[in-house]
Length: 97
Image (spheres, rainbow, N blue to C red):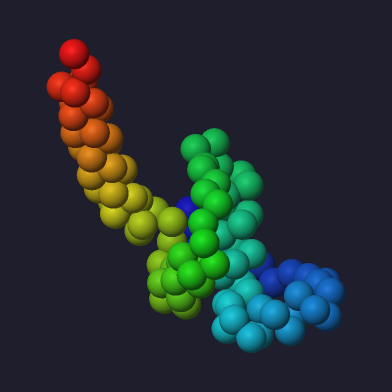
């Protein structure tokens, strides 16, 4: 990825602008992230709660972090989730007579 940027003009609805300002969203960061996601061959999309979405915006958009910065944490969470699921399935297996 290059550090060279291009300035663009972007038109959004007034209600979108107001809401993004209320949330304190860095619009340049948001647009760059959305474009990266759209162009990526290995993207995932998660539907999350509003609270998780706000936290993501704060941690990623406001700190200059990228999705790549999140990946090690996501992998660890998925590994932990898999371990929990395996334990649940083993418990179910033991309960079958």
